[in-house]
Image (cartoon, rainbow, N blue to C red; front, side, top):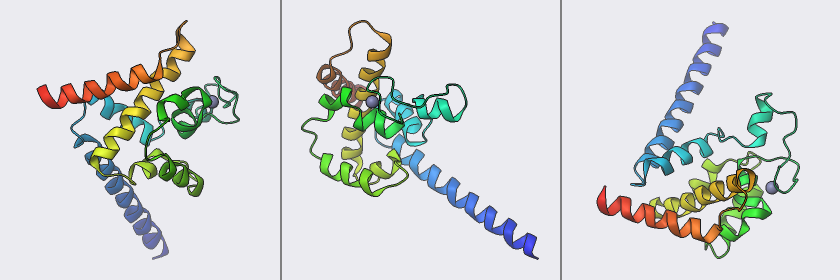
Length: 167
Ligand SMILES: [Zn+2]
């Protein structure tokens, strides 16, 4: 009987989890945004972006510290919101107080939690900047002259506009 109970609880837990995941999937794919942005958002919210904390957890590297600024742990929230190299992307973004508050209160540091604070249009605005951050960040790693943050943001905003107009 006890086994049955534990198993049922596990099953219900799993169903709950799948339900939440399905909901997140639906939220992201109904944003009417380019598929590339949706894929990025999905990976960012599920903590499967190739940040160093993720690679470290999978034993691919043995040091999770931020390769760009040297902070102790390069997780998704650090890479996309906190790292000093990408602050220009977020300068003037009107929801920064809400976001900082959420990061402060959320021990899990999950992008999904932040996403839930916004309506659909705000989600899209937020994700465009997060995506720009990721591109700028990677350019610091892989390119001789890093991408200009504001240029990337403007380019992505235009991409979303074009997608909505022509897709
Ligand atoms: Zn950093």
